[in-house]
Image (cartoon, rainbow, N blue to C red; front, side, top):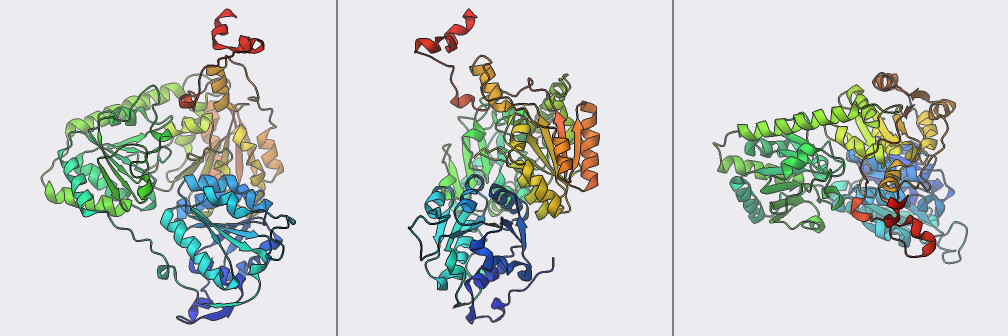
Length: 592
C-alpha cells in the first residue's frame, strides 16, 4: 500500500481547521499506522469513513478479543504500535482479556475507545459503560478526551505513553466528540515523543563491566527487550568476548539465535535443560531486556536452576522492573541495545587480549547435545495415535527457516517451548504471563499482516481452538495464509494433568467433545487436513505452508502423554474435613 501523506501536516507550524475524526486519522497517518482492528460500530463510523482515503486498512474481525491479540502480534513483529477500536460498551469490554494480555506482554498499543455521548452520560443508556474504570488496571494509562479541541493532543499523549512505558493505552472519547471542528497542527512523532534511550548510568555500567571482567562463569539471559531494541548482535558481541553462554527468557525463544555455539535455549516452564544446567553454574548473570518474571524463573524438571548466590546485572528500560523479583548487584535503567553495545565496547577496550574459553564451549556443546538427544527420544515414544512431542518435533523440522510461530496456553503449547528454535528475532509470538487461551491464532494473523513474506504457523490445543476457530472466517475473507496446527487430545489437558496428579484422576470439566476441525475449516472456505499418523505431520505442514492459503490441520494426539503440572507452585494435595467429602481426601486414596 502506497504511503498516503498527511494533508493536515503539510502546512507545517500552522494550525488548520479539521473535524475531530480527521484529527484522529491524520495522527494515525503521522504515526505510520497501516492497520486498525475491530468490528464495525456506529460510535466511530465518522472516523471509519476516512480510513480508506487515508490509506489505513480497517480489518474487521469476528470477535473484539481477536482485535487486540492481532494488534499485539503485529506490534511485536513490526515495532509499530497496534491500534484497535470498538463500539462503546460491549465492543470495548470484549477486548478486556486481550488488552490485559498485551499489557503483561509489554506491547505498545492504542485502544480507541468511544464512550457514551456527553448528553447522556450517567443515565445508563444503551451500551453505556465506564470504560475508563474497567481498563485502568490493565493499561499503562487511560487518556480521556475532555473537549473536541484536545482530540489530536490526547491521541498524541496516548501514543507517547504507549511507546514510553511499553504497553496499551486507552484513548477514551465520547462518541459525539468525533463530530464538530477544531484547529490544530498534526505533529510528526519526533515532535512529541522519542524512541531514543540511553545506555544507562555510566557508574552502573562501569560496575557491571568490572563484574563481568572478573566473573569465572558469566551467563547471559537475553529477553524481549533485546528483540524490541534490535540489540541481539550487541548481546552476541558480549557473549563472544566473554565466552558466556546465552539463555533466552521464558517464551522468548527468538531472543538469541539457536544456531550460535553459545546458545543454550530457553529457561522457564518446559524450557531447555541445557539452559538450566548451564545457568546453575553462573557466578554472574547478565539479564538483558528481561524482568526475570517469577513464573519464568521457577524450578522445572525438578531443577532449581536460578542461581541463588550469583551476582545479577539487570538491564531494563523500565525502572519498575529492576530487582522486582530477584535481588541485583547492578541495576541499569537503559535501552537493551544501547546498554549492550556500551558494555561490549568497554569489555573489548579493557580486556583486549581475552581469548575464547574452549573448555566452556565444549561444556555448552555437550549440554545441548544431551538435551537434544533427550528431546528426540521422548518424541519417538509411541503414542495413541500420535505422541504430541513427536508431532511437535516433526512440525519444527518441516517449517522453513524464518517461519513465525505463535503458541497458545495449554499442555502441548507449553511443551512446544522445548522444541521451538529460532535464528531470527520477531519470530516467536507466545502467549505470555497473562496466560489466556485463544491467543495463538489471532496472534498469527496479526504477525502475518506485519510480515507477509514470512510463513506464519499457530500451535494451539483443541480447547484454545474452540475460542478462536471463528476467526478462520476472517483469515479467508482477508486472505491471510496462516496455518493453524490444532493439537487435538480431546481435553483441557494442562488442567487434566492437575486432576491426574492432585485429584486421583477425577476429571471434572476436562473432556472436550469436538467436531472434525478439518471439515469445519473446509466449510468456512479454508484448507482442512486431518492427521493421525506421526509420519504425516511434517509433509502436511509443509504442504499447508506452501499453499499460501488459510489452513487448519487437525492433529490427533495422545491425551495421556502429558507435560508436568503447569502450576506446581500453586497446587496442594486435597484435604477434606466434612464427612460427605472424606472419600476425596488424599489420605483415602490408598484405601481404594
